Image 1 (cartoon, rainbow, N blue to C red):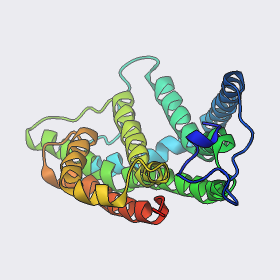
Image 2 (cartoon, one colour):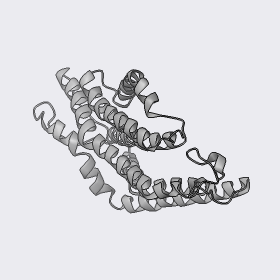
Image 3 (spheres, one colour):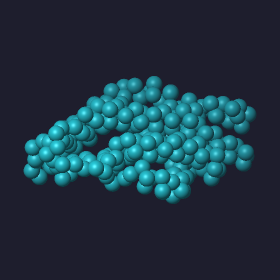
Length: 266
């Protein structure tokens, strides 16, 4: 990773502006990895502690989509509050909220540490991508989480609650189960939205090209709907399409990114 052979992109090591930095031994790599992991884990812990003191406020924000759906059935659901089914459930819910919110809060540091780990193995010219890539990674990660909260989760919550109410069932929603579902949705969307960044690295290394992505578009559409079906466990195509649509947009953006950054044949 730290030699010219493992640097992103292809080119002559002697070309101007492409001189790789000094090589690192395996021990140096492991030491660097340990340090980056220490900083990453430490940043998550600190961010989670901060979010713990704000967990009640974060809870009140995150629960709003479900509350709005429950309040739409005043006759069938007289109480729109979530239920705690064990003595420690409220504590576990706040712990999950603090940990997940801490992950999102620390995401700029985490993504920066990932880049800094591979930075020693890059050519000098490639290091110019550092700031744009880190910023793009953070923006896509947060945008994915926002999409999951503002768009996808409300639709899924409405579908499942309406399914139960229409079947003459009384929704008794466990706070722990609901927030586990919500937080998985947010993280899943955040990870999916990192696709353009993944394409950037694959294209720079010459592993993926815009032409390959165009040729595989039909298979990509199939894969996207499979992923959407996994992330949104609802049987209706409408909900799956809500997630698949931005994923198709991200795939198209990935084609453009690959075309721009892929190594050119001389």
